[in-house]
Length: 205
Length: 330
Ligand SMILES: [Zn+2]
Ligand SMILES: [Zn+2]
Image 1: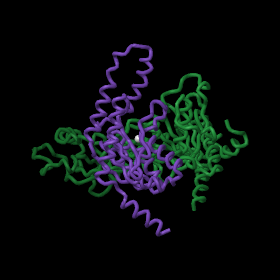
Image 2 (image 1 turned 30 degrees about the horizontal axis):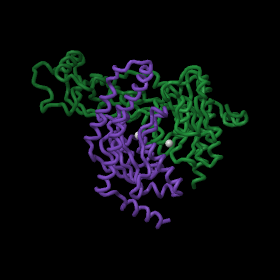
Image 3 (image 1 turned 90 degrees about the vertical axis):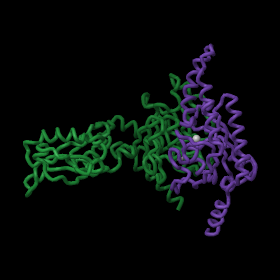
Image 4 (image 1 turned 60 degrees about the horizontal axis):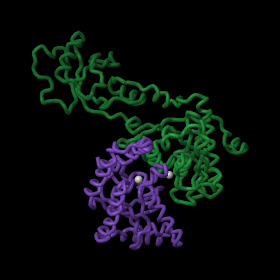
């Protein structure tokens, strides 16, 4: 028991991506965010990397699923679980060596989910002033919660301004929709309203 | 919705066996914060209103409007004590000369001394009572909060409905326990129609994030034509089918109530914020709970949605279920 615990502690302490890895994977996350922006979606990029391999990626799916918990991170975590199942790997063991790269600080819910799955490190770009769970609103990442998985380390600020700018651009684009003129518009309008509500929290206030 | 035998079992305790108490915000539940202030006895009672006028001009007590300027001492008969005392100013606001020389201005005022007065207006009756023991304080009472703190907010008819909903959550929790999952169940209710929109239970054995609340949120999404998962293989994870509901449902969980046997964790509590839940009722507190125990996410400042939380609904059976879980773990 003691040696097992000791091994885990060693693993966690030595486990942290280097600058080069952060640079490389954050670059991918930003590409995803930009791609989302160009396709009219919330510009947040998020990927999960295990042993130099992308094992999960996600984008926001709140609107299509009508489930407000379908944030990019939750979608990516589901992919990690599927990947483990598919490769017959132990979830806990894999997650303990998986890093999340995301352009925006995870919200309180996602931070708790990352703890519950024992993800050890999260690298993110800009702060999430409205919902941030890694210090902006609450610090769930390091809080004393012995029954909520393990605390994780954050590496923040990588290309933060760029992440904020993308969110602002997205928000500005979404506003003027007066040009369109069909029956679909009303329906779209209603959904966009909620979409905006949701986007608001990604906008660095 | 569930077999009669199980319902009878879950409802063994009657609605009088439990009390629902509100889980108030940190500001509403904290101890009264005090601040040092100078006060002085009024040695000549006839000068009282004039002295109060002079002091109001000199020290308007900005930020302490909830504190009364003058207090009557209860121990009036005490040797040397003066029956009335007047508040001068906060110690932090006091200049080096507390009362500028003004000839006859301060006639009737005794030697200033330091007292502690409540720093903020009281928000609840217990805070008001504690504050008033320090210095007379005014209180704009929210009667609903006072009644809720006495555990008397809900009528017996309402309590009977709450009892029924939590009993359904308990039935689901029991089903989860029999499947080897954590014994937690949850029910989402449309309080206007008094009908169940979704029932779910913990499915952590299948997916580590499928806590009962997360399951219920996805079941509500499915009832609205969305959803990300399929829980059809669990008979105790169900939703009211969309054509079942006469009008289209609201946006996600707006206006809905959630009944859950155990206080939600941080993930589930924040998921309820994102889902715009109306109210949450839970039975037993949990060690890392985020709706009262470790955090009060439902009343967290900076968050864009707040909701009311009540604890203690069917607390007995909910705690028994939770105890069972702890025994397994040990
Ligand atoms: Zn999130
Ligand atoms: Zn939970």
